[in-house]
Structures are given as C-alpha cells and as structure tokens.
Length: 350
Image 1 (tube, rainbow, N blue to C red):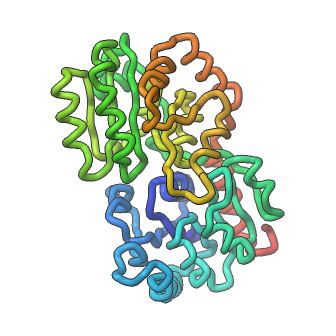
Image 2: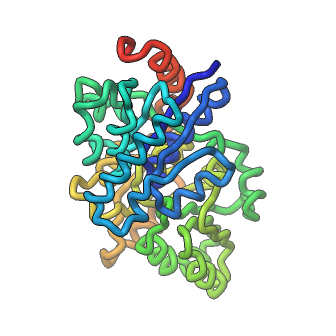
C-alpha cells in the first residue's frame, strides 16, 4: 500500500511546477497525492488532467491576505484529517502557511526553488524538518537545508529539436525565441516583445509566446501586423517541446522557468519581476552565471542589447555552453525517494 503525500500552497507555476513533478514521480511508484492550493484561477491550468486538489480560498477570499489565512488553516486541517497524509510538503507562497495546520504530527518539509528563501519559507522554517532547495547556496542558509537540484515535470522532458519545431509550425533552420512571463503572464514582457516584433521579423526569427491567461490577443495581432512567424498561447502544457524548440528565451526569472532553461541549456534574457523586496528573480538569474543576463526594458538601448545577444551566434553558443557546464542533475527521482523514506520512517529519518 502506498504512502499519502499532501502538498500545500501554490498560486503560481513557480510553486506548483516542481511540486507536480514530485507528485508525478510519487504516483508512478504507487503513492497517493493531494494538493491544497490557494484558489487562484490560474492554478486550474495545472490540474486539467484531473489530479485531485482542493482550494484553500486564500486568493479568492474577500478578506485581506493575513485574515484569509485563518479560515484557510481551518480548511487545511479538516482536509488533512480526511486525507490522512503521511508527509506534508509546503510549496512556498502565502497559502503554504496553512500547512502548519495540516501537519497533525506528521513529517513536514518545505520546497524552495528560489536562490533566497521567500517570506513564507522563512516564517515556517522553525516548524519544518527539512527545506529542499534548488541551489546549494540556498541550502547553506539553514541547518535544515538540503540541495536536491531542479525538480521537473514529465511534460518538461526534452525531445528532438526538429520534432519540437514541427509541433509549433516552425522551421528548424531559423532561430526560435521562446517568450514567457510565467504562469500568469507579464504585461511588461509581452509589451517588450511586441515592440521587438518588426525587427525580429526582418531577421526571420520565429516566436513562441506564452502570454498568460487573457493576454494573448494583443500579441497575436502584433505578430499578424508585422508578418512574423509566431505561435502565441496563453498557456503551454508541453514545456519540454517549447524549450527543445528554443534557441533563446526572453522571460521572467521565476524559479521553475529558470530551472527549465538550465536543464534545457537555453540562454536567457530575464526581465525580473520588479516588486519582490528581496529581488528574488534577479538573484535567480545571477545563479545561472553567464548563461543568462538581466534586461531592463525601460532602458533606451534595451532592444539593441537584446538583439545583439540573440543574433550573435558565437555569444549564444557560449551562453549555452556555460549552462551546459554548470547544469545540475534533475533531482526529481532522488527527491521522490527521500520523501518515500521520510514518509515510511517518520520524524526519526529526517
């Protein structure tokens, strides 16, 4: 009989993607999983295949965030009692605080994909037995830290570039630029792409744009107006194919986005989310060394800087080599084994 693993938190793809990768690995081994998520509409894109999940109503509540956590913790405790978890995993983000009510004496671990601990992980650190990180420098911030490397989903596996290009209607002979603002999209990234499109079209650059829910029409219209080869989506379930097709990426610096870029060795220009007090996405970008660089789209020369990187074959290949040389092993299967052992043995094994 398999063990039971309860994942608590979410809100963005950065929190959900590595957790879903672990859930997939655990389910293949005969275990049971359940997700308690924030209740944000974008989360439903990640559960379209029918994996069981429940809403904590943190993001759908009319209450202020701090007050919405109180009923969320009550829901988490009630749902955890019903599920009877052997181990609880906090994913980061505000909703993951409800994991403290869901533990019910079971082992509790945290996932942290960013280069620095987020606010929720810092707050819950005293209550966790382990904090599983993507970067060794992050693990070193706590005596409970353990670096497991990037965690990926099954749909993130590489495929031959020719097959990937064919999937999106691209020619393998021309450059492919992957543009993504994360699971919710980013107007700042989409706007910068639209401003670039006439110049990209002149260079026969093909664009795969993942714009976020409700944000694709403006990008589609811009692509049509400048006659550029573009495949524009709100969300993509086949991220392995997307990264396999890409020669370069224009993206946000979220943990799961840069983990995928690193594993697929795709050079990146990163427009970081500007409102993180601890500048998480900037630090995530620096962790990739010379394989990624920060870009401020408001600077007068931003477009020239970006195009000089994208169109310089030697530089692009050098960036890819840097990512390839520093790339860690995918940690999904090894981490699933750790979770299995901890669930079987309880607190004593952590």
